[in-house]
Image (cartoon, rainbow, N blue to C red; front, side, top):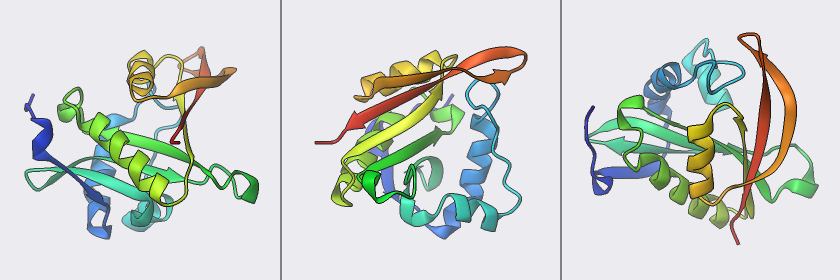
Amino acid sequence: MKRVIENEVTIRESQIKDAKPLMKIDKLVWNSRNSPQIPVWKSRTHYLRSCPPENQLVAECDGFVIGCVGWRPPTMMFTNSHVAEIYIAVHPAYQGLGVGRKLMESVKLHTLRRGVKKLRLRVLSTNEDAIRFYKRCGFREEGRLAREYVIEGQYVDDVLMGCWLL
């Protein structure tokens, strides 16, 4: 595994050119242990519609995109426009090296500047490493949808987590 010093990782706003490497990272990261449905991108355009550059930050190291964090409105209702739902993915070779934490710190600042007051996310109850990571980043469990999914013949809870930015 390649070792990374946190200072070598740059966080920047996503660009259209990042779509292809981010699609590859999605293929490496998402599986039945951490997602109720593995994303399948039919094309670069399909990816960009779901993950637009203006709502995404990327982590870059030595000129290579190694991860991203994105956000979207949880609903189209004005009454919760202060909330953004996030997703995060870090290339497996760079996990556990501070990249995810740096992405989380950056998305908190970036979205706060855009008027977001709260971040939320969803994580499978079986993804204990991710739950611990999110808690270290300031997220707290706010709810749980019991037996929300059946994955490989097992019921799995959907854990709802949130983090206030103020």
